[in-house]
Image 1 (cartoon, protein in one colour):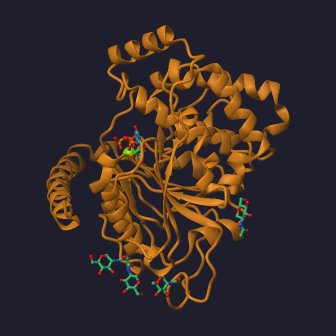
Image 2 (image 1 turned 60 degrees about the vertical axis):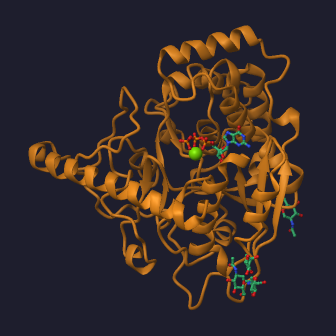
Amino acid sequence: MSIAYQGVLSRRRYVVLLVVLMSLFYFLQTTLRDARPSSWTITTPAVQTLELQTTPVDVSTPLPDTPSPPPLPGHPCLHRERANATLLMLARNSDLAGAMSSVSHVEDRFNKHCNYSWVFLNEEPFSDEFKREMSNMTNGSVSFGLVPKEHWYQPQWINEDLAKAGRDKMVEQNIIYAESVPYRNMCRFNSGYFFKHALLQQYRYYWRVEPDIEYFCDIPYDPFHFMQENDKIYGFTISFFEWQPTIPTLWANVKDFMAKYPQYVADDNAMNYLSDDGGETYNLCHFWSNFEIADMDFWRGPAYTAFFDFLESRGGFYYERWGDAPVHSIAVALFAPKTRLHFFKDIGYRHTPFQHCPQGPEWKANSCNCEQWNTLDYRDQSCIPRYQKLFQ
Ligand SMILES: Nc1nc2c(ncn2[C@@H]2O[C@H](COP(=O)(O)OP(=O)(O)OP(=O)(O)O)[C@@H](O)[C@H]2O)c(=O)[nH]1
Ligand SMILES: *[C@@H]1O[C@H](CO)[C@@H](O)[C@H](O)[C@H]1NC(C)=O
Ligand SMILES: *[C@@H]1O[C@H](CO)[C@@H](O)[C@H](O)[C@H]1NC(C)=O
Ligand SMILES: *[C@@H]1O[C@H](CO)[C@@H](O)[C@H](O)[C@H]1NC(C)=O
Ligand SMILES: *[C@@H]1O[C@H](CO)[C@@H](O)[C@H](O)[C@H]1NC(C)=O
Ligand SMILES: [Mg+2]
């Protein structure tokens, strides 16, 4: 399937969705005008929803954390060496069309200027077609890695009867991917193993890219250099609430871990992003990990190694359905000072069904092609208000 054909399909779908959402938006704007929040509302919804809420919201200028670098003449990699970093995609051979679409977005908006390498990982060998198509889409070096079996499949020591009971319970609760073991393999791999892959040992930073994502804006600076120069370990674009039934005992285990290893809990951490009662309960906020620009040396370090090993020993990746998003988010929020996190608010990004569209002057400067009202940031569903409150 050609990229052009994919583009037409997704454009048509996007237009239909846009029309539906806009009608809803205008309907709600007129009928719910009195309910308009005067400032950010901080509430935990009882039920998570996969649809963008369309109630009008205040999209006033966000509070600054670390500002983006000022625009430089020319492109982001002019007269500059590449950072110690790679683009990274985990994919199946069947993801080819979506993978091509994602790579073309990243190349077009950023990497055609820089030639950062791409690493593709899969628990099965990539097809010749997949390798040929990907190699043709970038001038960066491209490598294809096989995930070792012990980093992917459900370990022998997991009690399959218990795991099956956990999956069945989630099916009853209508949880997405409730019955899927491969999905659990993927979440566990992305939580604790990808950065151990041989092909990634030579790199410090990675930028995670999934099939079928979109970038809306030019990225006029190098986010890897930004991370390094500002001592950041974790960058995100979208933050909202996790589905509680996928992680019933995760927070209890996090509390056990903190009690056992208090030395890993950072001073000036971002606990108030994760919890509204000082750590007693988890408010379900997490960074959506399908976009991540992060430092693998943090994942490889003592705090995260101890944390992942502890969670792994509890079996929750299989008995429940712990996601790599809450696991990563909880770790970076607790085991590093909050100043080492970064909201890439100038990077326009979509992973269906949510997107982040820049609100400031960079929308125009960076040739964004998203609708500014269509952004998750200030909805009741978003955790960005809690993140920004950390820096008030
Ligand atoms: N090799 C391989 N990659 C997988 C597998 N399952 C998921 N992935 C990849 O893991 C990442 C996350 O999987 P997704 O299926 O996108 O999960 P999601 O983002 O929670 O859900 P979607 O809404 O379906 O996108 C993507 O990069 C997928 O390509 C698998 O069984 N094998
Ligand atoms: C990227 O690769 C192309 C083709 O090899 C080359 O012409 C270009 O100068 C490279 N750019 C950078 C920044 O490495
Ligand atoms: C991709 O393939 C086309 C022709 O098939 C070729 O002209 C082009 O140079 C290739 N691009 C890269 C980056 O390899
Ligand atoms: C690779 O670099 C060449 C020379 O700069 C350029 O013409 C071509 O478009 C680039 N290919 C891709 C896929 O960026
Ligand atoms: C890049 O980072 C990795 C991980 O920290 C390190 O092992 C490697 O030596 C670094 N490479 C360079 C060229 O600095
Ligand atoms: Mg996905």
